[in-house]
Length: 361
Image (cartoon, rainbow, N blue to C red; front, top):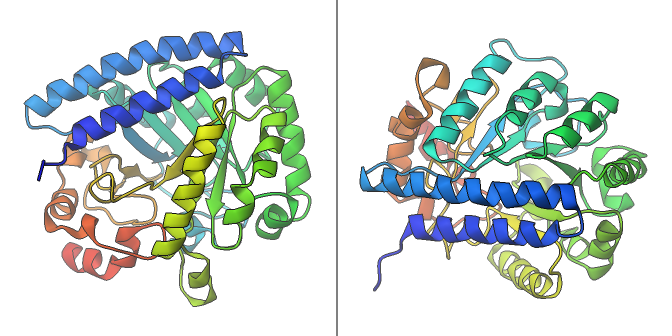
């Protein structure tokens, strides 16, 4: 059997995302110009990752950064609240904007092309968003509930085209307001109108469950988003936290059915980028967390396998991203076969958290 080439798989994935993004921005001259420049920067970043592979260093193209532990909402079933990584107040010891700027600069040097900014609510950290906007060679999707946009933020996103707001929806009004609060859906439609009027490229992030999967992959739902100016949809599999929430998580047959629907949508929707996280793990040789394809930095600087597996034995305050990627925990997870395990729900490591905790002890 031919050995799976992870570096090639990731390179092809990045190239595909960039090509689809270029198509999606053709009707927006300012966004299209930026994406053309980013495509060149992404090609250079890929060369850096290839050079690192020859040195025995695997650099993932993606990074997830939770830049704050504070949020203005209390969404039902939020993993960050369940992990005590999110609340009304900022946790002590969170990274400063200067520290995040240093992390972003190192990521650019290593060849990381995409840094997903999350939280908490990332719009609460305008200082970090400003720092990210200074690095056009990296694309920063900003995963936001969208309720804190003000004139300053619209101006920032207009000026810094590498910042792409990804507005969180659960589907149409019923699903969204049930999880996020009454009236949220209508407010987000107004935000989309303002972004489109300003010519700002934006997308939508959808947490997919067994309840809303059919609606959020329907032609009607995507038509509505397209009419509002949305250019990308990222589907994130729901990770259960026990109790009656388990029934919302995908089983193997649900994931297969969802993948088939997504494939059909991609073949019919050529002007919208459609991505799934964590995606097809069978095709990618297993879970891409713990540095295989990405890893997570929490608000305090802890390097974690992914947001759904909040365990760390290394803090970037004490060293570099490169050192974080060779931490004991990441090395163990990649070598133990745990990332290849079957699971229910969106996260292999969450379903095996007892084993991860046992290793750290």
